[in-house]
Image (cartoon, rainbow, N blue to C red; front, side, top):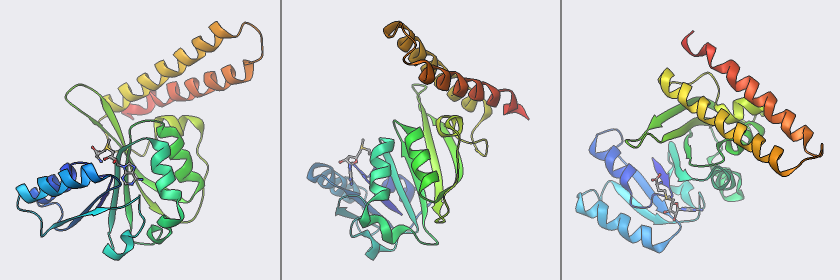
Length: 217
Ligand SMILES: C[S@@+](CC[C@H](N)C(=O)[O-])C[C@H]1O[C@@H](n2cnc3c(N)ncnc32)[C@H](O)[C@@H]1O
């Protein structure tokens, strides 16, 4: 497993300790995290199983031949940038699974994946102890681009494997955010100049609302 942007290497350490993986590469672009990752790994006695590398995105990582590439805890645009870089070309091959966890702008990442031939296998949700919901996208490169609607990009597809109540809360949160955006537009522009934007938001809200009743099917 390759953990891009590993920070303190918490994920590879946890996965090795739980016996989920037997080998990991923990990479980060900054010296600080690289140093802390090395210390944490050595403290757990895992230096022979987890290698720490300083790297920008996927540049130079092909030599480790990872089967699973995790990019977690970054914005959706940053993850798209890393996957779309020339240095990431080697990873677009059969047998590579991408596990992506965007913190923000998840819809932009889903659109990037659809337009650039990454087929989503799972859209999962996870919740931390503070009730914050995290989106996880598992995908593979197929080279075939496909269409996704705005609602799918924002909500994630129905082919998910998350508890229904979590999905329901996630959709409700996205609807609230869109409604707030529409209210903001209505307050700031008294004329009709942003009518198209408002009706686009209304359309997406309607489609997200549609997702809700299907939850318990
Ligand atoms: C917020 S931390 C996320 C840590 C961990 N992956 C997680 O999910 O908790 C983001 C990390 O990504 C690193 N990072 C940012 N851009 C990067 C890039 N282009 N290549 C590698 N690491 C990067 C940062 O240095 C930082 O340590």
